[in-house]
Length: 232
Image (cartoon, rainbow, N blue to C red; front, side, top):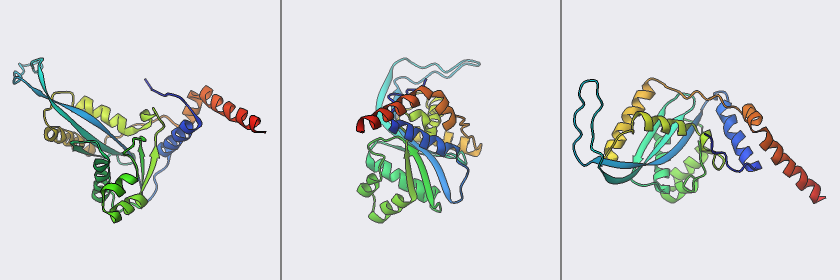
């Protein structure tokens, strides 16, 4: 179920910007990515699970030990279906900036422009690079990266959210007790899907949004019209 929230002109502008990006044709030397990050709770077993019997699932004790939280950062390439992820102990501007620097240098150093869809979290800024990376690196990222923000409560527009749902369902649906183990498991998942070039089948377009949210569009345009009248 979508969580749409309050729709304003700014919401619609960001919504259409992201949807237009999802629909665009491939462009030479331009990379199109969706990025997101999320915390993952680390849980370990108190007692060693019993090995499963034939045709049965593994048995584990209901008690578990909390081992803290780590953060997973993930970028998804809309054209190639490739995923790039890392695990960190924290979720800070420094973690974000270092991930972006690694992403560009390792995978997309030759791209003239990288158009990146992400939410408007306070750490997701160009300033994060200037505050945490060498000046020339930050300047390069500023010119190479082009940010496109999802609207508030519009994370459902971000394909990286779909990737995280798949990661949680296919890989992280069990107890994992350390950041290292979680990252290793996630990287195996990444490699498997990248090799298969599994891609998100996105079908929601700007035209469909205008039809689906027709009444919301009318409300916004009516407010604009009334404002113009009151100004005269």
